Image 1 (spheres, rainbow, N blue to C red):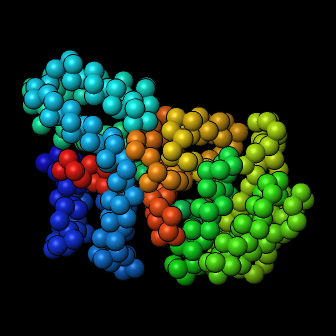
Image 2 (image 1 turned 60 degrees about the vertical axis):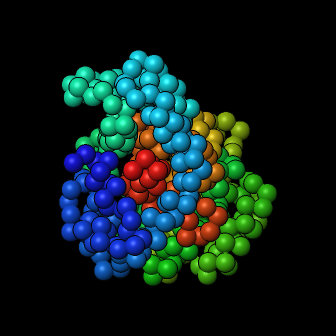
Length: 357
């Protein structure tokens, strides 16, 4: 059974019987199934079903755009032809998967068609989903969980350009972590953008977590030092630090991030535990360019992809993995706090391609 059918069986019709998810809990058929944390008593079958629904709803726009074109292509061509591959290539590039990724993907697909003597486009659509899954997994152990410290406060540093939803993401993640029983502190390190400190403080009030911030224009490193020092002395579980989304040039941004890292390490030498880059999914290949630029100037450990519900393309997740080789740790699938989800490749594939299953 291919990955297409395995994922379909994991989630298809689970709203009615739940039996497929129960089977999944006892199955190791798919390499990253353990990411569902089904062995953890805190995660119930109902929790997973709710998450699947969030993925389905959040990926509706992409499903109706990108995937509907794949369905129409299958309906247009009964047999696999060169013309079919040409149109498929165009659809995948338009889905923000990226030209280089698409070209290598099409090459692999052509080889499978030849080796397996595939003639039907109806069958090939299953192979397409399998191969897209493989782009992301690629025989690697995907680390999409936060690297929490066992001995001191976990320090999460958030970077990204203005307008991608960085502060909102921090607020939503603070709410999620607090609901998991963690003591959370927010630190307003973006002292350059007007209103940034106030915005983060409002999120701290909304989510019921603590906050450290000062007036606009002060040295962000001093604010960050105060926040990390407070977190260490008062035994917080997690400290989340907002940073400036815009400085004059790349050199200035690199120097600022280097200074921030030095300040953090003065208090907690092994921190930051994660440096998460926030990318707006609706910006497509521009978001990939941002990831490449930030990766050049600081040690990015993961991506948070916001506004995935707002794009009809949806392939950027695959492009990030292939072109930047960074794990997507969280995705934003809507405006509500619970719509920020830990990224799960199986739920993503199902939410995106369920109409083809």
